[in-house]
Figure 1 (cartoon, rainbow, N blue to C red):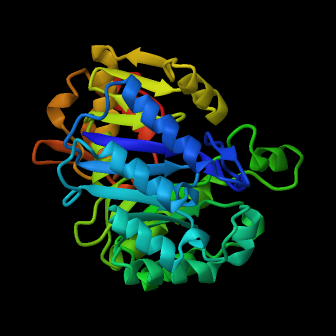
Figure 2 (tube, helix red, strand yellow; figure 1 turned 180 degrees about the vertical axis):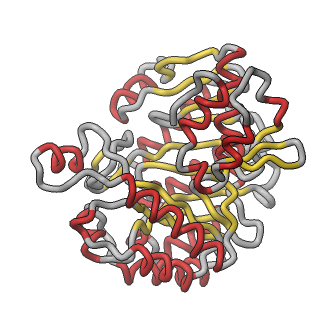
Length: 369
C-alpha cells in the first residue's frame, strides 16, 4: 500500500499555483491531526504494511513537528517498522532548520522533496517564493547533516522571456549541489492564479512553447551528463534513487489518500476528498464522509491510462498493449519520437514533449495530461 497525506497549509500563494491550499498565519496542527485521525476511523484505518508514505501539499514542512510526528505514528500503526519504508516530506527551503530536520528524521522521514524552483532571486520573488537562492544550498546541508541524504529538488522551466532567467545557470547550480533526485515542471497558466491575471492584463507574456521545448531538452542533456537518468517525463534520479511513491502512480498500483483533496485508487475506482480545508474539516467533525466523488473506470479507461502512464516512463509499454489498428509506429520512430525495442515502445525526450498527441495517435482517441 502507498499512502498520500495532503497538508493544505501555506503562508502565501505562489504566482503559478492553483493547488488546493489554505492560507494561514497560524498552522492548525492540532485540528489537522484530529481530522486525519477521524478520517481513518471512519474508513477503517490504513491497511498495511505500507511501502511508501508521502506528505504533500500545500507546504507540509509548516506542520508543527509534534503534529507531524503524531500523524506519522497514527498512519503507520499497521506497519511493524518504518525501516525500508520510503517516507517523503515536501518542504520549502526556509522551513529547513537543524531542529526541524532532526525532528523529521527522528520521526521517520528519510526523503525530502525540496521546493527550490529556481536559483535566481529575481525569479523567486516573481514566483512569490519566500526563500532566496542561498537558502536552497543551506537547506540541503542541514538535511544531510541530520542524516537525510535522499533529497529531491524541484525546478520550474519555461518561464516568460521578460524574466531573463538563465536556465543553464540553474541547472549548473543543481548539479553542484548533487541531490539524489530532480523534478522538472514546465510552467503552465492555470485559471484564477496571479500569473493568469498578469497575462490577461498584458503585464507579462504567456510561456513560449519553443522556449519550453528548448529548456526541457537542455535539461536532459545537462542532467544526463551529470549522471542523472530521466526515468519519467519530469523526473531524473542518480544511483537508483527513483521516487518509489510516485512510481506507484505511474505503474497503476493502488494507493490511499488522506486529507482534503486527497485521491485514492484501488485499481478499479478512483475517489477524491472534498478539496477545501474548512469544508473537509466540517464534514469530518459532523461524522460525514469526506469523499466528494468517485469514478469507476471502464476497461477502455483503464487501457488508456495504461498506455498514457506507461509512456510517461522510461520503460514504456509492451507493444502488445497497442492492439488497435495504428499508423505505422516506424513513422513515429523515424521522427525520433518513439523507440521500439525488445517488444516494448517508449518515448524519446522529443516524444515526451509530444506525449498527448502521441497517445492520441497510438490509441485512436487518447487522453490528455
